[in-house]
Image (cartoon, rainbow over all chains, first blue to last red):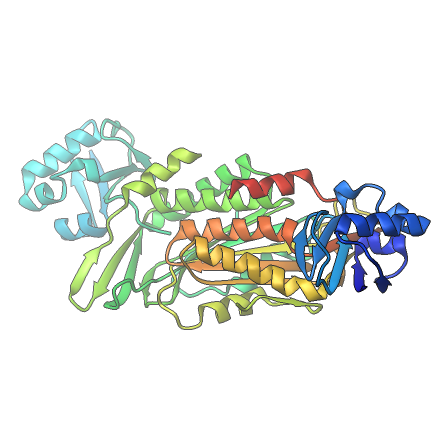
Length: 83
Length: 83
Length: 146
Length: 146
């Protein structure tokens, strides 16, 4: 399936782009992270410690085991620092 | 001695004036209240429940046993309701 | 010490801007504004009486206490007196600190002490008559938090 | 729901006046303004990035939660993004209630959730370089208060 992925803050900087569309068979966020990490070093650098990377699916925060079926957009970013 | 007394809110309304100078030998606020209460009904009406009347001496909150020596101004008023 | 008592209205935005000035050491600015509320739809006006000789002294004492307890860059109390109509501003406090927690706590503290220790009294004029607002026991109790 | 995200500055006084309108059922108005603070005297600018598709959704969720938990007459969040210099305004929240306690608590709650649940990230540009502001563990812990 095709999936839009967006990146923010230092996750975006490590991966080197703000947005991309990937072709993947990953069933969960965790599988997607593993797939990208295996693909290129810049993903491995961004995802080296998933304890400090947050994930949103279709603009809602989820955990790594969230399923990707029927998902349009996945976002990866550091803990928020607004306010 | 001569003492300036000021009254506020319903204490002022019951006594019927905002400020007066009295000649008194009272040594404490408590004695002053007793003296005024004995003098006229309007004081008795204002001081009927001293649990709900606050006292300030020279603009500082005090209790009924505060001494009146060297005092310039005594104030009587209800609990504050600002803010 | 910039606190003041006045009959005329105040402009919150203007006061906050003056408090900030061009300082760059303030991270958090908290403001509380108290307004005349018409609870039952029968309020004509609120009349605020104060004890002129004591009011500023009391406000400055409350301010000093807040400044001693929290790391504040600035702190301000403005309280009005006179006749106020529903919806109008009664008073404001503002606290500025490097950190959010200090600014929030100090503003809350200022309000608690202002309510029970500053010499202001409110009288309500309603369609059915006039009466002094009674002090709430909860307001006196609130002081024990600090 | 009147919360918004914007690059341009906002006028706190104007926002509070708009929130109040001519209502007479508001007794307490609390405002928090967050400012760019130059801690060490070396800050050139703060850069605020956000996730446009998610930001408003997140703010509205936080607002709904506050409105469900406290008796609020009105509530507002404004958050800026882009490049901000020391002393400039980053964001504000405002809460209006009949009572002081609700207004204070709801504003504090909004800030706690905004800090850890709204998709904003701060990057500091200093004379010595640039780095992302790290999230504080205390901010995440603060959510457990509610």
